[in-house]
Amino acid sequence: MNIFEYAMQMEKDGEEYYRALAAKTPHKGIQHICEMLADAEVIHYTIFRGLEKREQVTLPDAAGLAGIKNIFARLKEEGPQSVDASQADLYRKAQDIEVKSRDFYLEKAGESTDDREKAVLKKIAAEEQKHYLILENIIEFVTGPGTWLEDPEWYHLEEY
Image (cartoon, rainbow, N blue to C red):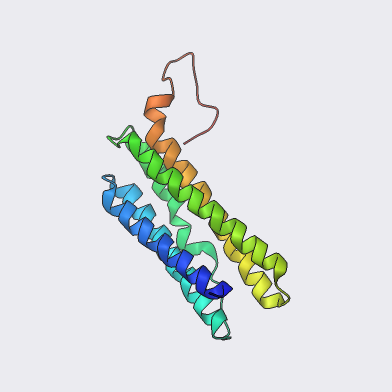
């Protein structure tokens, strides 16, 4: 299996995981974020398929994920939700997948002698890091009610 076949399989697996996660998540906002992450994995798959065929590929900016910040803002405004905090383990598993993907793409970028391929791999690795951070925010959201003390004498140092 060459690098592109391996990368396409990783992206396909990531897409399937996010779609399954969206189906298991009761909260509409988090479902939407999972679907957006799945769609981003489809874009990555398409890019790797194009690279494998030696086609000219265009790297989209991460504008498709730009709306996630607004979703988190709405979630915060809505206040505490009845989200099962045990789902945090599912999001942590997704984070592990993103870390492995990021590290793989950075390793292959370091090995590549093709400047265009190297740039693509680094760009996708950076997007995988963004996915990791998005998942970190989801974990904070679903675990926050159980881990943060809400008291006038205590305050959050970070917004979630």
